[in-house]
Image (cartoon, rainbow, N blue to C red):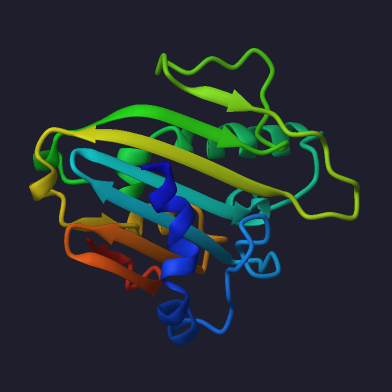
Length: 195
């Protein structure tokens, strides 16, 4: 399944080139040139397994890209973590699909929390080394679901994600599902993509 998500940026390059001027050739530089306001979402539905990856500049989600030092910054980090740990809401997964979260990973030096434990027993946190002061920080979230009725999962609705993170203006979404593959540039007022 993981190979499907890794293949998405390459499989959809012609679609992306048409929908967006930025090409996503390199997994590390998958956001083009770390464009503020723009995030990347890849989703693959294969059988009963749904995998979703969200990559975004930290400023889109937190409002800043530096280590959280003030109480206000720490509150913003906690709020962002809480939102990202409720992915069913963020991605508008239909209840009829019966998707159960199997795994959730949040990766970013800015989200590394001391003593934070998530209720979901399968969540793994990965802390990256702090980047040099001059580099940008990204947030990478990976989710894997097992869906009991995958036919009821017709697509994703990211309206709640745009509401939760108003710094996110556009999401370049790419999906592979039973009806093939597609890419679409989503905005708050046009936030749905179908499988």
